[in-house]
Length: 51
Image 1 (cartoon, rainbow, N blue to C red):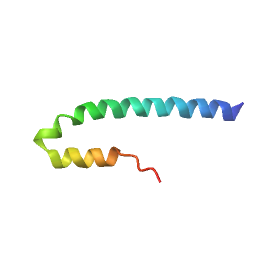
Image 2: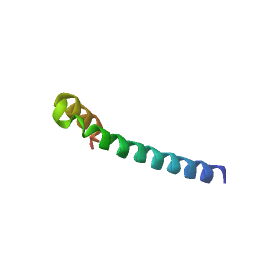
Image 3: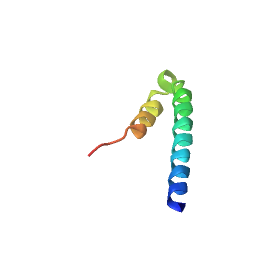
């Protein structure tokens, strides 16, 4: 039962993290033209590398 609750808590935290990243992505669009180097670095950091 404790592991089930922990899993549900982790899922909830992951959802919150995803929502925060979506908001940050929208904010970062402001830098696409004004500071493209910064924006491109952010985009690269947000890319998930799949082996």
